[in-house]
Image 1 (tube, rainbow, N blue to C red):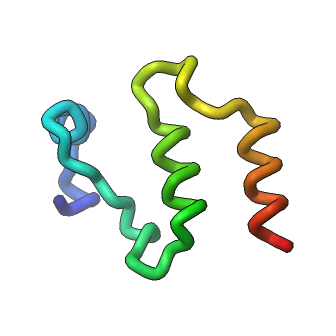
Image 2: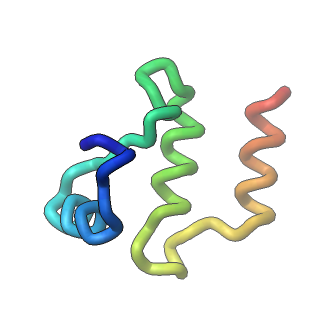
Image 3: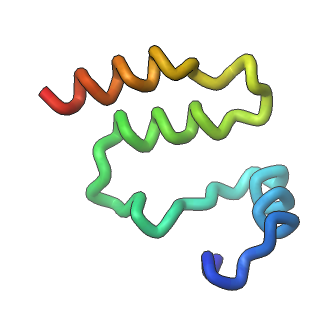
Length: 64
């Protein structure tokens, strides 16, 4: 999927159909933890998303 021509509707339909959309900066060499954190942040249900404190804690642990 080309990020320059993708519409919000295209993104929504792709996610709903089970396809994963990988941002261009999230390549194969990205740490698993960062990819996992990003997926959690994009959960459809806001209650399933991490709060800011959790995101910050994860980032601090990874930066050590």
